[in-house]
Image (tube, rainbow, N blue to C red; front, side, top):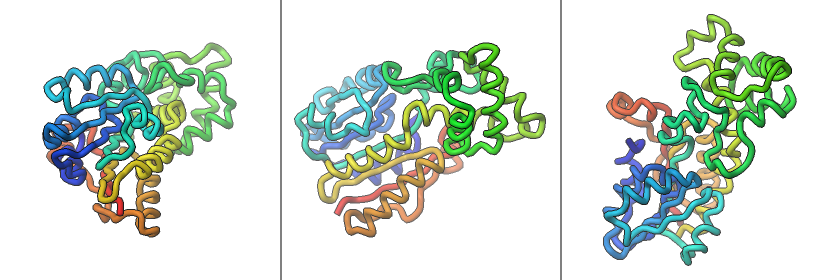
Length: 291
């Protein structure tokens, strides 16, 4: 179920003949709604760093194959990916940031705090270090900093210390091992939170593994560079760290006369959408138009 589908497509405003980038195509939920509006002469550029997601997206977009171009890679390399498709500029960009349902529901990917799986968390399994690498190799101070800054976890110091003590006995290699360790750290009061007590730590490790904040900053800059005048940039984020980067970047573009805001404040999903799709509950949507 694509998050905030109606608002995202309306603000993106794809027109017949336009070239639109879905920089995080996932399972093509947003792309299916976009490509219908492009007509026979329009083009959808579907990008994802996850090869498994890109394969599924291509299958779901088969009926519109003549309108679609696909590229595997991170949206922080947008100019390079577009150049590989012989495209210099586009009319609209959509980014739906963060972990996808496909990744969350595949326990072997290691994103799900409630299910047993390897402590992986790479969105592109062929690149970089895993979450297990981080918790078993970084210093206690480095682990504490990641959990505090990226997870905004108040028990970060206690959790980091427990991780280091545990790995001295044996490496931490599964999601369950880390989740149970955190449950022991937070105590009964922490377990009464509305979210799983390990959620913030898992989020922090995922952000660190995938360099999500650096990637977002670079992706916004590259996106603006390839966006035509009157082109639109729509971003859906899911936590405050992402939203802060998007908000500050869009505001700076506005202050410098580079873009105009299409959303004064971040749009949020309706109560009905949250009821039908619980994973949409923390979504924030912002949009601008290049001047």
